Length: 161
View 1 (tube, helix red, strand yellow):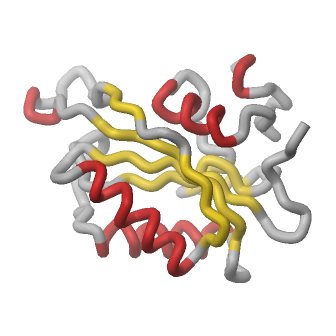
View 2 (cartoon, helix red, strand yellow; view 1 turned 60 degrees about the horizontal axis):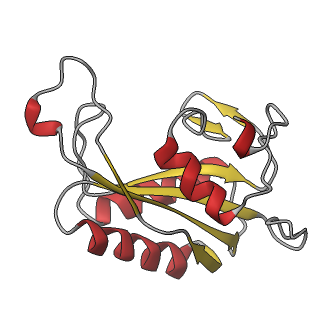
View 3 (cartoon, one colour; view 1 turned 180 degrees about the horizontal axis):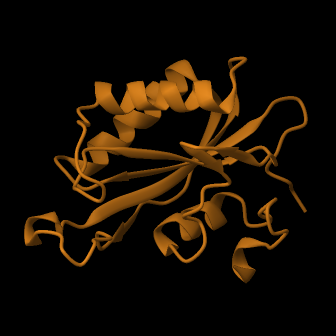
């Protein structure tokens, strides 16, 4: 059984999504920037299309299908999870993401799903990502990359959550 995490470096797993513009190009551009600045040995899941998650009072114009995927890679810079999050936000901005209402359509969305086997609880960052449970657009790409991954909060494997 192969384990996704490398003991020589921290293995990071990210979820990527896009539902504005050229969605595939947005995902590719995000992967290129992440590879150039933050992660090496990047592996990619398949891209899946999913309906947008929307609150009940969302305008109909927000109902734009997402393309979602996950990537994993080895951390290539000495950086904390909060510093990594700040770098991810810079990449999102560079690709055209602007501040908008929660759940609004976006050019790119990058979430830290897992940081090695660590748990992070900060006001603006929870790792493993709280959206893994019950969100197939997060869970399915993650399962493709790391089928044996267990949530360090619960000890449960993805197939069992």
